Amino acid sequence: MFAQLDEVEARYEDLQARLADPEVLSDPRAFAKLNQEIVALREVVEVWRELRDVQSAIDEAKELRAEEDGDMRELAEAELEELEPRVPELEHQLKLLLLPRDPMDGKNCVLEIRAGTGGDESALFSGDLFEMYSRFATSKGWKVEILSSSPGTVGGFKEIIALIAGARVWSQLKWESGVHRVQRVPATESQGRIHTSACTVAILPEAEDVDVHIDPNDLRIDTFRASGAGGQHVNRTDSAVRITHVPTGVVVSCQDEKSQHKNRDRAMKVLRSRLYDMEQQRLAAERADDRRAQVGSGDRSERIRTYNFPQNRLTDHRIGLTLYKLDRVVAGDLAEVVDALNAHHQAAQLKAAESDGF
Image 1 (cartoon, rainbow, N blue to C red):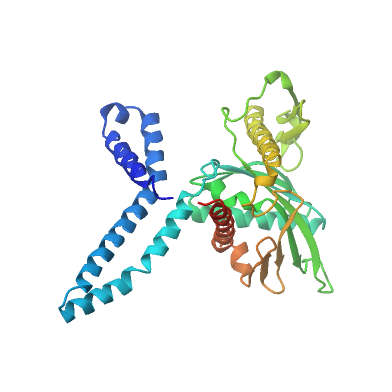
Image 2: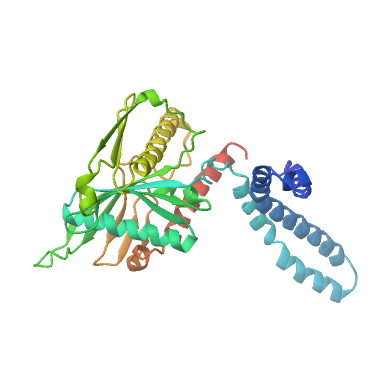
């Protein structure tokens, strides 16, 4: 498994040397591409170097242990006791680093949250989920841009769509798609009864023009007057945009901006991501028999998580994770959940790889 790591290290050193090339320094795009590859290789190389250093230190300690001097042998034994457990730890770390990476991990994502069963309470929960993801994004230094929203009658959202942009957003949020169920006493409940409602979350990788080609002739674009809050502007301008992709029937509407041009741009961004996601889902279905490292099916109708407020309990049904700190999770502390999902996925990948002789 580690046979090619010396070549990886050589490639890493070559890339670092090329960063000093004046031609590369004068070309921002080439510099960024080179730096991106360096970052991708750096952790593997650093762990590989540490493993070699530890193995070298172990060899030296074994030589010292063969000496007749009692103090030297004792010193060598102590050093071996400290060093030898590091080898399997570092080898395991390298195995995880060498697992195939999701090519979309570096992408931004489009977050879509829709109220489901539960009426007004579901819309309120949609708002809570959006706040949860927004706070988590802020803690990561990511940017959240609302692309489209439809407010609920008593608060929250019937639907909200946002772009989340930053470092490795997709890698952190890709497991969030599915049905999120909430159990709590609604503010409107006079008898203190617990109600159950649900929302659907979809996480789509942001698609660039190069990821998906959209023929302008396949689009039907309609403009109309925006509805909802917005003062006189709502009733006087046809700024809202509805785009229909005729071949697939996908429809996207956007009315949040006063500018028809901005609404069109936002709608196209969502449409592009939905079409890209549809293609990824189709490819995934074709190789479904080989998908041994899935956390879930990716089905938007799959119930993935329950938020039980009376018990301050969060349960992720896919991996059997239960946390009694729901208040902190909905406040944006999603790291433990995200890390557990990624660890589960990696463990499944590693198990599959090892069964193939990895």
